[in-house]
Amino acid sequence: MVLIVAVFGFFLPKLADYSDIWDDLQDLHASDLVLITAVGVWNLFALAPLVMTAQPGVRFMEGFVNINAGSAVANTVPGGSAIGIAINWAMFDSWGFTPAEYTLGTLLSGIWNNFVKLSLPVVALLALAATGDLRGSFVPAAVVGVVVMVVAIVFFALLLRNDDLARSIGALAGRVAEWGAKKVHRTVHGDTWGDGAIRFRHRSVDLIKRRWPALTVTALIGQLSLFVVLLVAVRAVGLSNAEVSWAEVLASWAFVRLISAIPITPGGLGVVELGLTAALANGENTALTTKAAAAVLLYRFFTYLLPIPVGAGCYVFWRLNHSWRRRRTTVTA
Image (cartoon, rainbow, N blue to C red; front, side, top):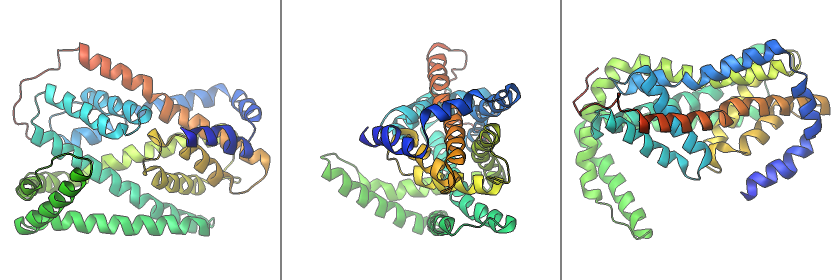
């Protein structure tokens, strides 16, 4: 709360005056409002195909309800990501999926989403170099993304390589979990994690072999839909490609996505607004900074605020709608 108040009450107004931002937003053309509303609504549906791919048997509207209900919690509650996953799992359970199936689906969708997220700073860096807009300040983010992604891929590959490695990694994770649980006076049976890792390996290898292209494409679509909303917002407030190129928008967005992955505030509230405004403005004049701030707030309205009531509505719909409830069966791709 202190951070959020500091950002919106002190730091952001130092970059751009709220009255000037409001003036820029009031000057939006009707066609721009229609366009950004269209891409903003599309963004609400963009991750549903990833859910369908990682969780075979899920229908499109079920994926839409599932992802938006979880996102609404993640955007509003401290530690909301964990609670959002619990809601997602409750929905899957009511639709007849087994715990093994929806645990695997959640892990795979999360892993692929993060692989794409970590690779985007590198893509943005290449785009900046190709367009001649390369900034040295973006290089560290690309390096961090590459290092973390390589470590994650190596860890994941080792887990899937054979049963012995999977058991060793699971047992190590179990010991770490036991140690952490003791610190908060909880009990975790880490001795079963080795066998659990083997079961995870057997279930995931087949699904990954058959669906890794679809996982990659759907995760990329889900991530880039956010970028499209930001790019449309930047152009809608009057910032031309000469002032802020599409590659600079991509790099700014990818860099801030890495920062916001650290759960400092729910949904990165405050962190994203300040980081994106500063990255897009890049120390330029006040008029450009004001337009950048207006674009960021417009972007956050469609990608942070709008999903909250939509997700709440999805949750209520799930609680009241019993026509989607199914008996538990093993669902195959």
